Amino acid sequence: MRKSVRTVLWLLLSLVVLAVIAGLVLRPSGGGDVTLETAAAVRTDISNSVTATGTVEPVTLVEVGTQVSGIIDRLYVDYNDHVKAGQLIAEMDKVTLESELEQAEAQLASSKTEYEYRQKEYLRTERLYEKELVSDAEYDEALYMYETARNAYELNKASIVGVRRNLGYATITSPIDGVVISRAVEEGQTVAAGFETPTLFTIANDLRDMQVVADVDEADIGYVKEGQRVEFTVDAYPDDVFAGSVQQVRLEATTESSVVTYEVVISAENPELKLKPGLTANITIYTLDRKNVCAVPSKALRFMPDPEILSAVGLKVKDIPAATAAGRTVWLIEGDSLRPVRVETGASDGDMTEILSGLGEGSMVALGLRMSAGAAPVPGDIERSPFMPGPPK
Image (cartoon, rainbow, N blue to C red):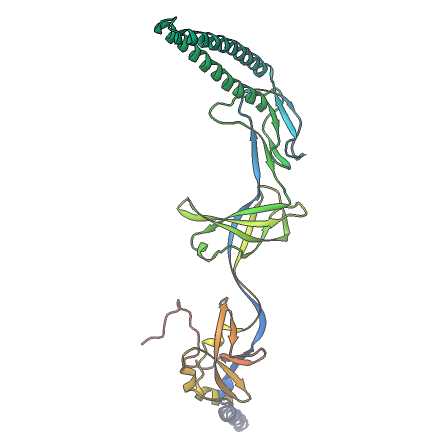
């Protein structure tokens, strides 16, 4: 019995040893652990952008006020009413202003009568003075009275212009075609035009043509230029993307909580009147916007092959000295070979780089060597994060 057990144990041990030897002999070579990553030059869009927030505003916004104090007698428009330029929108109580006009007209008539009388008296005295029939004192007095009456008449003529103008200010009309955005007064309310003109209405010119005033961070403002394409959304319509373009980059900086921003004015068409004044917009400004260009992954421009490693996967490397020439190089795959090709590059968004010349659409290029799990590192081909610690020296 013991002999049979010992025999079984020896057989099992022999099988284990044979399995280990077979594993060592039949293990795949190191070349199977490394594969070449490739990609084709394709037509794509390349873009870079900066983000900001802003406020939707009408392009033209006029605050309508009054330059005279008094009581609001009548209001003819309300919120959201459409108005035309010159349309009557409010009237103030005119009793006091009309009384002031009557007084001014009476003073003007009185001064005119006095002026005409003194003028005749002066002319009569002047003729007598030329004949030496009156003294110098009498002539001087007539001249003085004439000049005084004339000045008083001119003063009253100027005063009545202001009084009539103030009476005209009591009739308030719309200065532009537009929509009433706000109304700040009620009928019977007293307004006082002292050091500051009180605002009665705010009128927007055309709500189908809006603008967005964005606050762009100082770190991004250098990339923003007039004419760049803009997309933005508002919380009121989260599924809608609105389009616009940069119209103006304002030079005045705004500092709030130690954050410096610059205002960028963005045009925005609003044919459906969805955009309302005051909405907050989440803005994307495309500082780089290239459409349908030939491009390759940016990794292709950083790849430098190792002939020994590539030979393990059945690939040859040609013209290695040519890869060191001036200019940017990609490695073109031709059958079982890699050949360096100098290219002229254009725009890049970090992931893809535009190829202006040297490479055609559909050309296959090498990106790098990819290791399978458990394989030894490939020298000189692993992109290491700058934040990872390096190997011990």
